[in-house]
Image 1: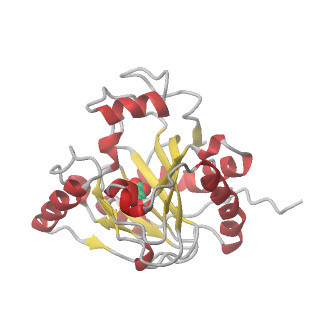
Image 2: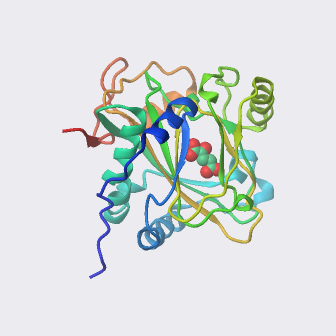
Image 3: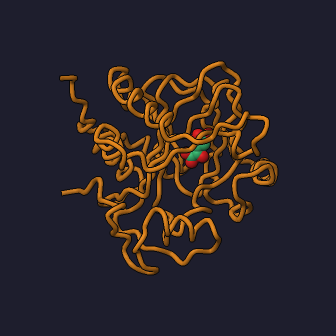
Length: 271
Ligand SMILES: O=C(O)CCC(=O)C(=O)O
């Protein structure tokens, strides 16, 4: 029987790290999980991504979004190994600590595999896609290998949750240029750093972020877990993507009510 890695022990956030997140709404934390833990989960996640992926077109036949990554969602429903990763109390507690909430729920998970030769991920803010009533949302971006810049490490614009220009843009060539220009004009700091083994970043729903192309010969393997405040209510969708997200990620939830569906379990709660 293989060793079990429950990812249950806590990772302490320092006052400085919390202050950094409050100000910038993004942070990269080191040594959140070990090389042995990464190896343990990477194989199972990659096997599911390969099994479920139906994107077989060559990169040059896809649009900008399609070139950016293979996207496979709610993998936690597929097997117990991935469920234990996505439901990890360690990651969920960090999310609660950074959002400064008493509990967190799962919104959904997704693997984002940027293939060798894969394109850039345009500047965007995730919350454009989400019918959620508050800003208390956070994504854990969890690389399953060391991720140098040339592989497409996630880049952030520090404090950009305050910028409202571009909040109505889906991921596209337009979002890349309009948001880039607005961030430059606003003087926001662009954080571009490689990710070491075990580094994990967290960013808020309205924080602008992007990634460069993967110019290496190896796929950049990343698993994301998207959390929301345990008290999150469903907002009225303001675009078709948000309507789709409601139907897919919280079916049965009602506008103005707590999002408490079987797909949105509480993953961490303070005692
Ligand atoms: O992995 C990427 O290239 C983009 C990730 C992203 O947009 C996100 O995690 O919200």
